[in-house]
Picture 1 (spheres, rainbow, N blue to C red):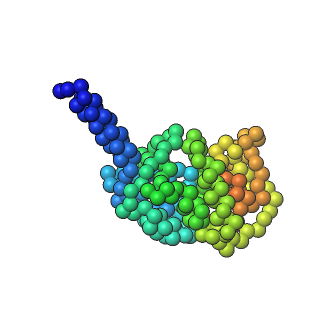
Picture 2 (tube, helix red, strand yellow):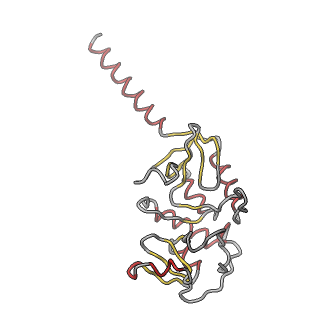
Length: 219
């Protein structure tokens, strides 16, 4: 093999290798589970970082409000398309699902889009917070417009009716026993659910069991 041929062959290998690596970042979406989860062609489930969509009907549990709209919008965005996955510090959740920021080939940031359309709420779980500010801004945009889960919002505002935990970024009803366990330095008093969501808190599941009620304070 001549020196010139070896150089050309080496460059060819590098270029093809680089192209393969780039292509490997893109995955085909085979199925859409709900508003925040997709299934790739290789069977892996991907959970969107930083958002929580309304729960679809499951077994004997009824669907949460806007669950079907959220699923269908996510389906329209991603099903049968190529997506790129961008990771944060934790790559998997407790169910073995990949945790990712998901992008379409036209540059659309899917996690952000679901929030902007009011079809999910912001859900922070440390240490995956690299896109936290961008995602919370997207939620606030939907809240201002009162679209999706924020439409028709009606809530009786009572001072300090809710308590936020700045460490976990969850909020609790003041009557919930778990709210009493929050360390004083992490405790924030909140006037309403609206204020809690606006500040980036998500409802604590151990205090808000069952269906999420976005438009009511009657728990």
